[in-house]
Image (cartoon, rainbow, N blue to C red; front, side, top):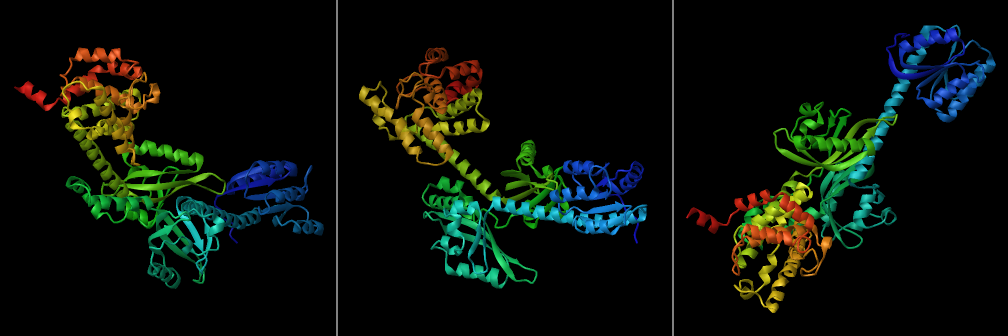
Length: 608
């Protein structure tokens, strides 16, 4: 019999009313176990049990106020499976009979207590307790993993005949069907006519006959007739005999990407050569999402404890290179603090969903769309963080290419509008820089100010629709001509507002509202004060400041003092007074921009 026991990580509640015995046994138990609490009688023991967490109870029987049996009966109502050892000087038959009626009682020891016997009993229970704890931990981890998968993908289960037995909320949202409409139906309820029977024959052969995982792209039809496209992984679930119990399918929505890709391919065939050159990577683009899922687990110190093969593929690391490495060592340095805040969100709210910008083993950048979950132990304490992600590097790179192309197109179109009216070559550049500076001074973020800078060159794009005879008239407009000229704001808005892209939406606002005046006397709608969008109020100042300082077909450039006096006079009438104050408080910065982007003919005069 093994009487050796290392100190174990279990907690014991020891209940004994005799002081000497309690003190001696407590010393012994404290050498064997990490945590030992003592109680002086059954009533005290019950109160301590209610306020603490214990793995094992060791108790005397005959005690004042409440006997050991009475205490265990009450404890059984709270936790019916916690083990208990009874220590008693009584060996009468009625005590054993009473103990046998309590399922909570697992063992007996008699006084005088033999330490070897006590150690053996504890050893036996420690093994069971640790096995039970490990089972609970594994079961809870599995449950949380299932929840994380459920929340991060479009999930369904089917029986061996292919009838749906479960769908998550995301499946219902994208398919537009209710759960009741889906359960019991085959998956062809959402099948799109474009999907051939051969695809599904191959799918069923793979998962049912070969009992292997199938992965592929599927086009579906929602209840309302809309189309959605998903990257799909179907897994056959086998019992211990290798028989299929059910099928689980995980999907990720790639509808927007696939639709956008088709649109881009069409545009490549219809736009000019410059746009073709800018978008040449789109021709090479085949797929945006990997069909599998990347999985990573990190401990509370953010050290990586587990990664799956997909994550290794996506990140370019080998397992021995990344395990035990700190998670933030593979995150771009400029976003580490932000990601740490997100982990605090996970710790507080249990979940965070977002994009992480990581550094591959070769130093290149990868982007992962992650759902991070807080994993809790059996005591409901967070023990680690688990991330389920999909590689979106190609999507991000594609969008960057698209955004760069949009910027070039917007600036080029803005320049075309200015060129038709024979305005100065660098006007749109200066207006763009003035607008960004004023936006930052007003308190807009760097990102929003940059968007305003990119969009502002489109402020006069509507001049494309104004006849040359009016646009380039060297004299003052007649009232009828001015009415025609004012239409350029509405023309520009109608040209741009049909797009769903944020950049073009901002451009539309600027084109529409940069001629509105703070007192309501502007055009085309006579908006007043803050009813005029901030983008319009900012661009109005930038445009007028630059236009007055530039030669036009109908006027010569004004002197700086004359321009500044007009801006002051129009404060609160034409221009937002807060923006005008910011302009004058930072006048040197605006003049530096003006001097940086001088028009070519001006530079020629200076050189000559």
